[in-house]
Each structure stands twice: as structure tokens, then as C-alpha cells.
Image (cartoon, rainbow, N blue to C red; front, side, top):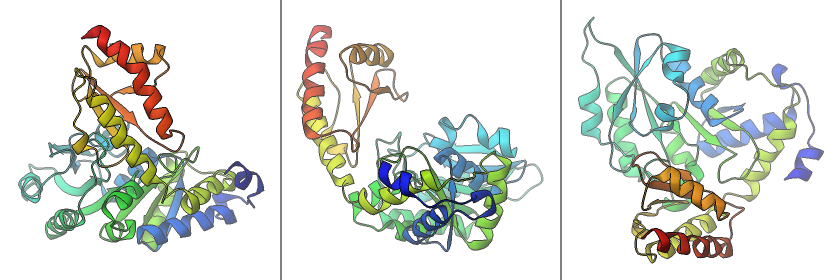
Length: 328
């Protein structure tokens, strides 16, 4: 990947003249089932540009309560676009058609306008949950019937593809816009893409500039995204296998709350004795890096990725075991 970055032909992307960026945008759009794509610096920027395409001040964005756009984008929905979120508590991050239809505002001057449904796939706080395509089709159809636009926050869409066998394009082509992160399981150091129609992406380019996302010789980082798309999608299955192994080993420690059967992709959510912040600190001292998840006070998130091998999983649990035993 670093060699590809060093050897990438570059131009000025602010003028649309970087050939490597253009190749990445075209390839990503193809994989996500859309005519055009836009290279952006992060998944947050991709999501916020998408919201800006569809929402005006006073409009409403409907999303699952644990979604990235709700918890991890510094209040961008309100701060950048003057819109407001309407959150629905789903089952492991997945909301139902009934929940959506009941949340859509009726016509009336006293109500905000329901304008956009944002769907996260896989759903991070849901535990890395992948949407079954039949359920995905149903929720998108319900949104369309109500006149809503639909954005797919597909930061980990290729994890969903690998887990379900459904091509990313089959999800993506159902939506108005779709994003993917190259810096998650695909292993690039930076970057995401937002895909949609030619007209939407033309406007998205303008909004990217407004958010400070205009880039110059960006081919040096776009090359990493291209390499990731060419080499690192099929290997995501290794991460899923390692995550299931991790969950199985953690479940054998007794006082750790984890259900291996709920591990669908590359994430394991486990409850430990005591506050998650304390657990994170103890594990860090033992050389194991995890995050407090936030849904429950004792819940810790583990993520498997291309830098984690099966031996690393087993070593991590071996380091965790004495700490768990001591706190039991």
C-alpha cells in the first residue's frame, strides 16, 4: 500500500485533475452501485455532506439512536445544517418499517419536515450488525413512499457484503447516497467516499469545499484506498473469523458477558466487572487496546482488523484472563 502511495500519479484534485483520485471515485461508485463518487477525508465528512445535500434548517433526519451521525460527529447535523435528529431505538441497530412510519411527521406548519433517513450498515453500536437485504429493501421502500431521501452510512459496507453475501452495490443502488470508509477494515490510513448521482455529487463537491475538504495532490492517499479496494475486501472474512474466536475465548472467562452467537462481523462487545473506563485502563496496562462502548457502563468494544491475527486474539485473551480472575 505504501509503495502504491509513493508511485501514484497525482494532479490537483481541487480542479478535478488528480488521476488517482478520479480512478478511486469511479471504482468506488461502481462498487456501490452509483454513477459518481467523491473522495473525502473521513466518514464523518461523507455523512455530513450527504445530510447537507438533502436537509435545510428546521428539517429532520431520522436515524437509529446509536448511529454514528448521532453519537460521533460532534453535533454536525445541527451545527452545520440547522437540521435536527429524530432517533429510533432499533434491535441491535436495525429499525423496523413500523418504527419509521410512526416517526415520520404529518404535514402541518407546527412540525419539522421529515426529509432524510440515514441507515448505518454495518451498525457499529449495534455490535457490527449487518442489515439483511430484504429488511434493507423494506425500510428504504417505506422511506421512499413517505417522500424521504435515503443515505447509506456504509463505513463498513464491505463487512456487510462479506457477512451476508449481498454485494455492496445491491445495498447502495437502493439509496440516494452511499458512503464507505477506506480507513476501517480496509486498512487505508485516511479517506472515505460518498457516492450518488452525477448531479448530487457535483453539489457534494461544493459542500465538501465548504467543510474545508478541498484537496490538492490527494492521489497519494487515494492510492491507498484503491489498493484497499483491490486487495483487502475478501480478507475481511479473516477479521470475522477472528472476532468469533475472540468472543468464544472471552465467554470462557466466566465473569465476562459476551454472546458469541451475536458476533456477525469484526466486532465483539463484552461486559466486564466494573466500569468500562477502569477495564480499558487495566487492559491498556496489560498491552491490550480496547474502547469503552458507551451503551452500558461496563461494555467494552473489541475490533478485529488486518493488523490482528488469530495468534494476537489468543495472546490478548491470555493477558486478560488474570485480570478478570483477580476482579471476580
